[in-house]
Length: 61
Image (tube, rainbow, N blue to C red; front, side, top):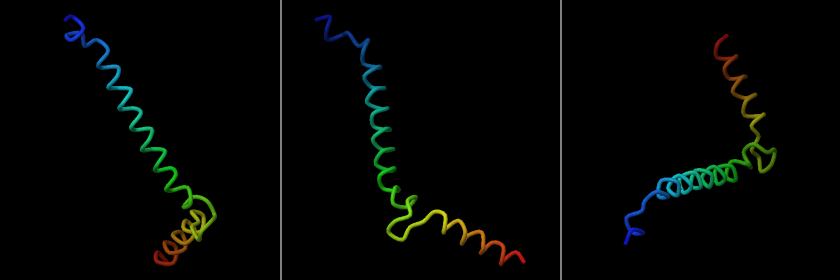
């Protein structure tokens, strides 16, 4: 019956599950936003940044 009361490894297992969940969420987010950062499908981070810079400079002058 000592096996039922033994909780020494419980904390480590919970941390492993927590970090595993965070890694999975990060990988899913990376997969979703890959097209945005790549120059495909009409999405271009470089073009968006240039448009924002142009809008800021034309509004400030």
